[in-house]
Image (tube, rainbow, N blue to C red; front, side, top):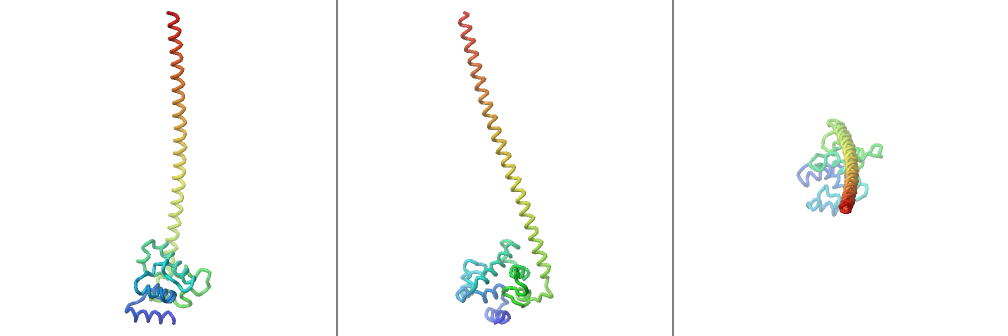
Length: 195
């Protein structure tokens, strides 16, 4: 059964348009897991409990969810499916066919509109831009952390030097006090003996 047939069956059964993820899971999960999904016992985002027919389908779907999370943050579940992300994640190491899509129009499968009428390229550009911005932010954060570590070490070194100086002052003060005490005792001893 092809994508179109699964799509039509879903639409007849549930009286609504399915998301691309729902069709993918319908065709790649175990029968038991599909039933749990239909009953609402698990979510389409619950990678821990989704049981896939193959490791490849698990890796494909998990890679897509991870890429969407990287791109959109924890709110990625509120974002529409992105064929550009699926293509980038799944086309790695493949020549023409994209896993889960084959030679079909990926954009149509994911969004329901033809790729010739979509802004898929801009989605790819936006993704690349956001990845570059994320990398720049990571680099800036690493620089800030390095500066903070250097400042912390400098502060610790300063505190150690101040402690050494404090101890030296205490030792000097004690030495002066002892010298004054000895001088005073000698003076008193000499004074008594002269009287």
